[in-house]
Image (cartoon, rainbow, N blue to C red; front, side):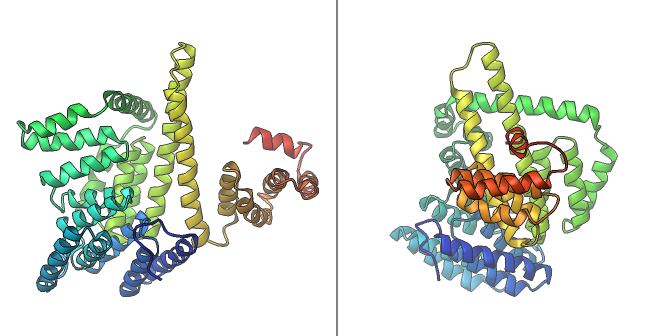
Length: 418
């Protein structure tokens, strides 16, 4: 079943898309590239709003062409036909056909900047902004058209729509460096909200200070870094060097650099293990930003300078982290169905979101692991309490108390760990 591009995927389609994604990962491991392409394309059709499925599809397409940066050698006639179809779709504002035509073009050349921009425009019109951002990132990458002023201007507008005014400003400044007297771009930069940009700068300063303190404890081995960079330039598909470089950056507190290294590794290999490592670093980045927000909030309380903005930012960051963790753990539970710790992690996140019906079966599975048993049973008890199933709740608490290795009341433990 092909999904309507104008709406997010339904629960059924999302579930089927996730199954295609997991099967695609297995096909990639077995180097069955044609099958992997079919499964990734099916996942995109079922869940066109999911950026990961697009990213995986693009990575496999690059792999098929051995990362030659030019795509198929015999595709010019078909590309010309697709360009004409894309122009017609734009004129008719048929964003579904524009999306599909762009995807067909990217199967022929996944580096093509115009096809990527076309995909970004279609996704933007359908309000799939994460996909629009991914497509334009590719369009203006060094392998695309990094100096295309029209692409950069549109990319900046997408950043604005996602409330990332600081990134929008930096993107527009790239245009201004090429055309210093472009009044339209100057006006756009001046119209960006200064408070939002100042807030981003404040976070950047704190991140830089944190990196410096980390590097005082874990100094950067510049010789090792230079050697790893040279190796990756010679062979970007070497996963061992990619992971080593990313871990080096992570330990040095340079999480953004680690994410970029892992993303490049994923782009040229399509290996889901690399993507999962990138997700872990992104989650670590979100957690550190949450700590920074908490520090700012504490300082404002101490100076009685709280205007409510930092509190709102803290709540927003907390919710963003929780949603991101759920998205990641849902995929991993599907990919690793026998990992009970993952089920415990996902069940705990659903519990924090007060989705007790989804948390209960996961925590029941996790309680079968003796290392997780007391914690999972205690959380189960609180889930049943929230659903007013007091008898079942008491049974879980009693089991947890029996299994506890000390005299700690499971409820006391729960309150200190949530």
